[in-house]
Image (tube, rainbow, N blue to C red; front, side, top):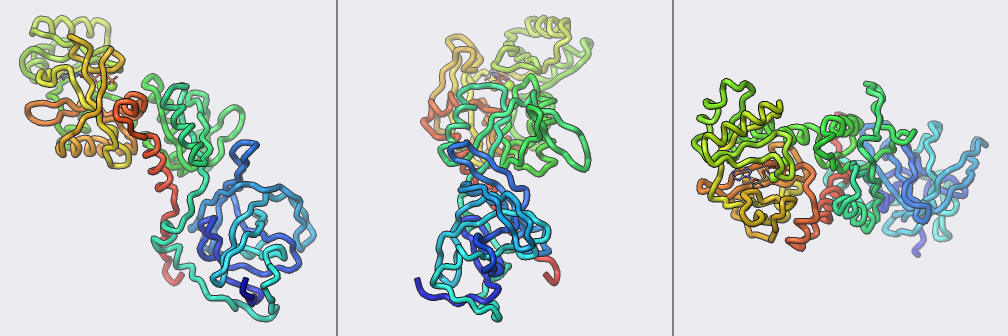
Length: 460
Ligand SMILES: Nc1ncnc2c1ncn2[C@@H]1O[C@H](COP(=O)(O)OP(=O)(O)OP(=O)(O)O)[C@@H](O)[C@H]1O
Ligand SMILES: [Mg+2]
Ligand SMILES: [Mg+2]
């Protein structure tokens, strides 16, 4: 390597950590280099331990945070210049300066006394470096401005993420989320939503599990079952309060789960859907049916999933008796125009981050108007029209969902949204379309956790 001259302070970059500019002090009294970090947490398996930490690259700018992660190489006792010793995590990363780069060992410490962001110890100062103790910044200047520009996002390395899947089930979808995440070098933990507990505290929101506070996750992937929506969304809200990126937000899950609420949201955004009405009082049954049109009509339990509470009433009389029966059971329901021309078929569009990544057509079992796969329906890949695509995207956006399964009926007057599912299963659609949908979800998560440029402060 070409010789480099260092003063007592130099601009350096640690590209492997996503730190394009940082001021480092040369400290020949120390063997290993040190980086000022906080929220230092280890994660990953015993065979491949990793460490996750936050760095404020600019002294005095606590609002600028870069989250880093790196494989852990060691944990060792380090004695600092003031004689105090502490156990520190050690990582290996590339130091870049003056157009050259070489690997160095870095210990992580959050000692408040450490005034510099970084100290360069002897191990990093190879033979090709000559130090002039009385001079400073002999190497080309870098600028903190990069943290205010899109470059900070572009140059951020792919780092190992710590991800939680909120799920109570060990099914295809959960397993795929774990497998694909781990293939990409992330650590994916499956957390049983109902076993999370929380202290609702304004100052220190946190989530506990198995007797411990849950760590900081880079992302939370909610797979909340319909039976635990209120509790599950409360857990997600807690993560949202901490500032964790949740692929689907609590508000969108809540609104899309409640069929009445969901239809109101869709209607307010002028998204096509079958004419729908609902009423609470038995006195209004015939007026209610009048609002929707003439028989045949669909009567749907609000809590229905897998098509279990969806009834097709061929005549007005049949509709009345179904409604009476539901009322007798104190069940909530809605009445909907039967889209006959859909002919027992619906289209499931899988939306991830504002894109329809796959679509399949589901066809009901012989003689069933319901196309649910759980009811014996079958699925195959389908090409959708631009109008169908736009409708699916708008429906997912209406609930602010990063991942959604939007179900459409093909009607004479264009696509009609039946429902928006916030925990769409991946098995049916991956098998029908051959697409790697879980991979696309991770593409989005990886892009979302990249650092955002921070606005410059006046005078700063
Ligand atoms: N208004 C309608 N007109 C025609 N067919 C309909 C209508 N509503 C529902 N269906 C059929 O019945 C199926 C089940 O209805 P829907 O999806 O609303 O119920 P669900 O029980 O919530 O099902 P899921 O398990 O998908 O959540 C639909 O996939 C569709 O094939
Ligand atoms: Mg449903
Ligand atoms: Mg459905």
